[in-house]
Length: 223
Image (cartoon, rainbow, N blue to C red; front, side, top):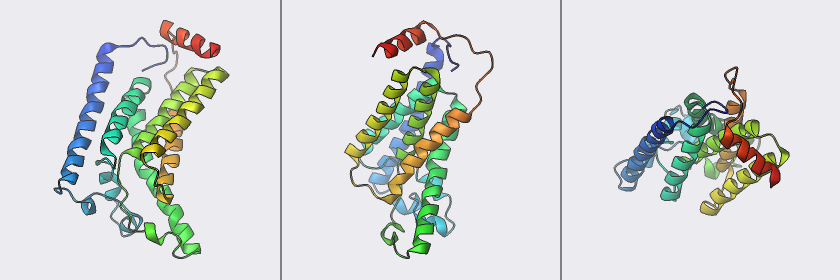
């Protein structure tokens, strides 16, 4: 959706249908995993598995929600719809792919370098199953933040943007306080989401903000 473009109910409905369909698919895969029909060994990535050449696990690990599964699926749907409402579908797709796959490779590579210097430093994480939707969610939050940062330029709007990102991180931490080095992929995923949205070229000749945009910007400047 272009900046200043009026809200198209048909487009929003279509995008809501897309994210609901993807969330439903993830929910079915999660249920199948919980029932024992899909084992983690066939889906979850790990530093050792990827080092052994099982690169497809980088993709399959993003089809099942990690615990707690219900907040994860709800967060995936809400953040995904928000990202699709603000950015082009291709931006959202590329950010999801980069956040889930590339961020994981970056963290695995970092752990490998550290392990080469200090052997056994992360030995307990070498075979730990790495699965879930949270890296995609983090990348989409990055997309949303970058789009809003560029769209609403007052300092108060930027400050609220930063606070909202911190709030999202705290919400995630509240649901999953047992973090380890592998969870640093969420920071990388967020940064990649910001980078994808910020670097993607916008169409030339964008119209001025519509009434909703102007009212929101005025509200933000008064906070």
